[in-house]
Length: 480
Image (cartoon, rainbow, N blue to C red; front, side, top):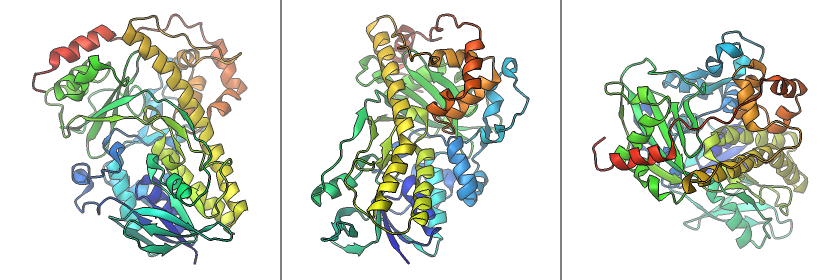
């Protein structure tokens, strides 16, 4: 039986363990963090301390791609999530009557999302994987280095932080944005291919709440959430499991006028002023169950070490964020990690020989999977950063650059308000089911966008920059 060592026991690592177990590997997961708590998932967020996964305590959502992967490849995890109080959200509920809301079409069953905190999903994955006879999960353990065969330069073993040598046929780097395999390769004398990077330009502020009844306080205008990315900030709410929800507010790094978002009063003032969020925060409707947690998003990164330009080291693979990071505003990270893990296992099952050809095939697959999402995220972030910066500086908003004869994002969003075909195409892309290239290759989609009534000037944010700053500043020092 071939052996695999997986460095990192978060979503990508646990999904990789599940997938590799399914194709006959004996798997050892080495996780730096302590053993997760035994209490129910209701208490998991407050009990499970994950210093190596700071984003784990931020707002998350599982897009349609992630739900599809669980449904097809790990149905028990999806069932366990439902039993733990994670709702499956029908995105077509956000389809307006003008666009044909209420009428089902083929493919609509895929347009769902899972309302689940990341900590809950990780805990369920951990329990599922730990119950497998051919998987061992070891905590409080790090991978310090990689040992390569001196002749063939293929994976031979890993060495832990305590000096323990563990033989492995393959090693999977699931260490997230730290991507420790870069250091392992460098220390082993293997030159590294360059990464592609682009700024995400985002500071995220998240707070979790619990509803006091089972009734949702307001409609989900995004199908799986409420809110939007506005002209100078972002404010989005996502329902979670066990009657929880999370509100995430995003601002530019270095925006000192909005430092008050870090405080409970300032955060609450901004959230209540964000369109669609106020009903969820009314007295008697919900109560906060966490402080405001702040995180600076890393840049969008497409790892060179995981791609086809890297000198191949047979038996070493990167998954999830170790291969590609995209802005969390798009909510694709967990879904792409799940998909990547099972794609990796599928390819290893098809090409079982651990050699250069196998490594190159995995590198091509990884590149093909992540490149469209890296480019979409990087391009969207460039435009958003320019717009937010203009708003902060009091300048006119940036104008999107022409894309040849392709419609702009604003034109697509405008057409989607009244055309169900456009709405479905756009939603499939946002939910990671269709790439941007596949969307723009659909002649029917493009024709419907062009047939839509001309869009007027882009609507101004319902909350001006000046009003947002005023409310946040005025709230500081109060008790909320």
